[in-house]
Length: 288
Ligand SMILES: Cc1ncc(COP(=O)(O)O)c(C=O)c1O
Image (cartoon, rainbow, N blue to C red; front, side):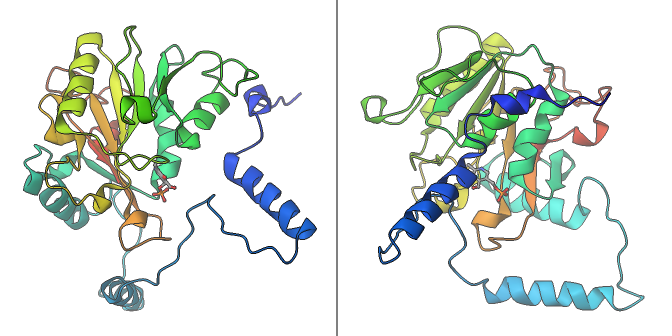
């Protein structure tokens, strides 16, 4: 008899955003005249810029001509795109990332969950509190946690509070955790991380053999030149971090295209960390 994944039953209120939508709809029905400002899902509000529209139109036109038509692309993403990303998003900021270390996917949200397939089930996991719920729910669904307690925390996860008392930067844990989710600029607080703070995390990860899953989805909004856009601006991060980025937040909003960035040093031996493991295409450390 077919069985289901019981871990889904641990999800407290389904995915957060459907729950927000359920409550907003119930409120709107009960209060039809009330003006509602929605602070839940950050939906698209601005039209696409001209450069994006014309590139998309051109791409569709190309598909109608035998000379420019493209079939399936390479699984890691088109080389021209990976090269541009490596040059503009990483090398221009002094990061030692080359195009072979970049993996283009269809979205960063899915990748935050899919990346778990390459990790063992016995890793200890730290998330900040509050946190982008995808990191937690995907670990719950993958069976990496116990049940949800009364306080809304899942057994088995290490929660690192971020609030005004620590200037919205998570304190480095005293105990060892194997996987650490960091998101800067942060969703939901908007806080950014200094180079010093990220350096402390990198040092911690290297000392404990941990991997930092660094979500830089909102890096395009950084205006202070002292704030790092990528964890690879930090020395040693190549050995212990996988970076996720999102094109949806920077002009192509609403259109799924993401990159994971990583490093071929992730095994600490200068070889592709994923080489010889199940996902050879993920030799790289950066994922868009
Ligand atoms: C922190 C964070 N990471 C990732 C994502 C998802 O990015 P994408 O639109 O590329 O799936 C979001 C979207 O809300 C986000 O807030």
